[in-house]
Image 1: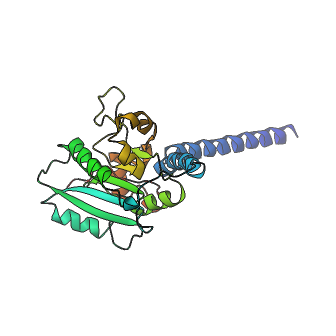
Image 2: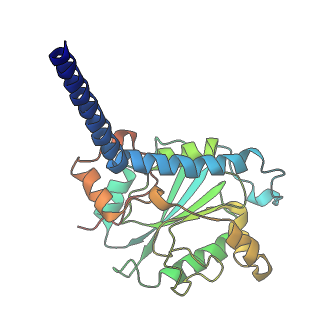
Image 3: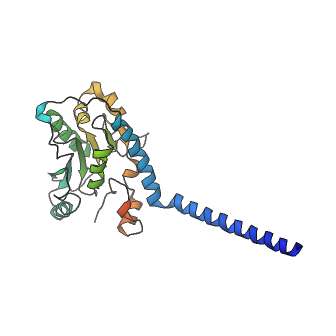
Length: 252
């Protein structure tokens, strides 16, 4: 009986150790599985914005000439060097395809081949234009042709989660760095930036800069890192169910 009990106890100990080992391995895999981490963080961010969407209150009053079409939710301005014809062709056949509802895309052709050169002046110039005229959609996205834009998921977020006002989504910069865009302070001007229509107008009103800065939400994992983007491209991250808005810069 004693020998049987000892064997049984040993069996139980081995079983418990094996079970705990499996739990630990599974937990570690879950913690470091990039799809899970990215989706979890982005769901949390978008859920917080959804709360603002629900309790946002009255909409910002705009003149009739700036009323956007109900069909256009997102207007995308893409900075693209003139020589990048093939890149623009690929964009039109992928994330800017005409079959994607709610999206309007316009290419702003530039002479420079360097995407980072004069980026702040490019943003300022076009924000000034839209603030003086109108943004033909609920949201404005300013980007470069080196980024993949996950338009279906951005449209889904606009329809279901994002507030219609007081919202800017951008990638952050190092807090110790000098702001590139004075009115957005901690936004990285060289990454895609999403503006709700009212914030475009506020960007040229210094008295509104404090409230505009409070409207900024850092996208974090909505912007894939360079390593994450490479893993999506080589297939080691399954992008079919991955929640993200932008890739890192794609260069040939």
